[in-house]
Length: 268
Image 1 (tube, rainbow, N blue to C red):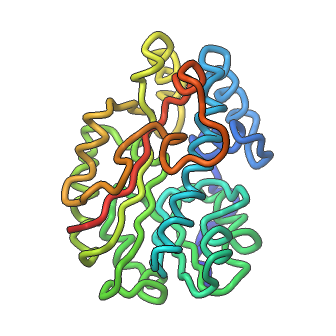
Image 2: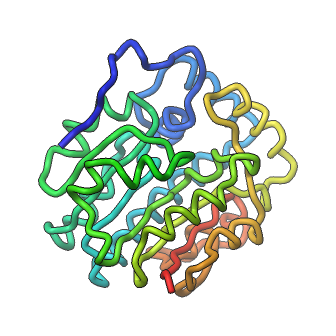
């Protein structure tokens, strides 16, 4: 299933796009010169961003695996980003091939890769949509085909909510999405923070002001508030390497380089 519905010439290459910049941070090639230039300006002042991007991607994999091993069989992944293996469906299907995944992103370049890299297997779908209008996501026919709202759903908002400004009412968007989910569903959320990089955060956010979406880095307390209506599962909202960690334990100096919080909440 695919619902791309756009001409290729609608891809905007005049401004950097956060998803394509993120792809660059991860070492990908699905980006344009304008994205690479902006991403490099970020790295010039905040090289730790690469470590945060990788740690965030690893958190996504651990979170999906944890939920699917716990019985979740349907996932809504909003803000999918440029496909980077392992993608959500690859992690989920390695545990259980019957998991259904609906991917949503607002960048047409993601759609150009969706057929080959996101929906080349069963039980997956992709469509263009924007979390700022959650009703259009919930009412989209691809959601109806893949997601049964009478059963628990995992909602993924991984490194995407920091591209919603306070004026755009992120809490209201989350409330609309939460109301659609049955009890026992899960919210997987990660979010950029300046709590560990207060010295360079203003320069980083200045770069994103010239992108298609600005960056709003939020404090631990601010991110925690997004879990309203959910009970956080252990270990709560933490820096992403600390969420069910695998591999060697990071030293304090290494951990301070990771400016991303992550957690999973279960809807009451």
